Length: 288
Image (cartoon, rainbow, N blue to C red):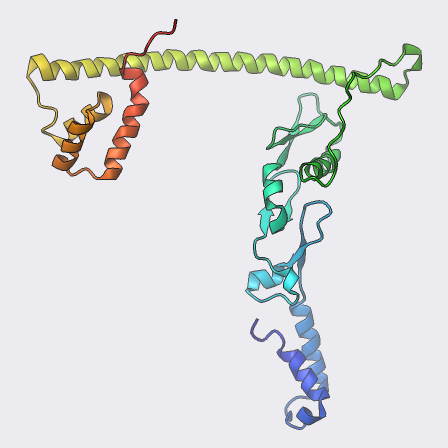
């Protein structure tokens, strides 16, 4: 914060009779103008925490320029920035964990309504106006932090309202719920069909890959035993291919590592690749 308080100190020196006599090149007008300029340039830019009810703040100007804040409580140490989600802004160190665990993003439903998708799995009731989502999220995060009590869940289902007692508001609410249910049912059906198509494609693709890899492994075994009695340990590339596709026992793998100068990272990588291919190349026990 070098130079930040020079104008202020100079102005105080002019007021002090014991120091004013030493200042020959500065007039009171210049000192006042410099102090005003310094106050405007170096005024704090405070940022508040986005957690509801939190009153902590930090000085963004001091943080970006590497100065010590005027007030120690304005320090920016430990603060985070939320750039995604329903609420953007700064997060104080006290609330980083709870906001991260409950970061929510808005989601538009097919029927033109809005809801939230929270990292914890919570989703509020769809709303016709997206501006209601942020207050709902603030209530949710206050509940998650223990500031607000959890909403009570009725032990028994709500009683039905007699038809004669329905109003325009209650009927609108029922129709909105029915509309949401209809779109949810259609979305669930489409998602189930998409998951089945994806599963069927991967099943057929992995089946073909499995047959191709097994054919290569069988040819390697035949080459070693019957055709040309090939030594798959002599060449480092051959030894590596056998290690990944078929696998060496621990003793042989240790000897090959010493022979071909494989370090522990290469050995670890070979074991990982072998574990990935094992379900394809090794016979799997059949389920009863």
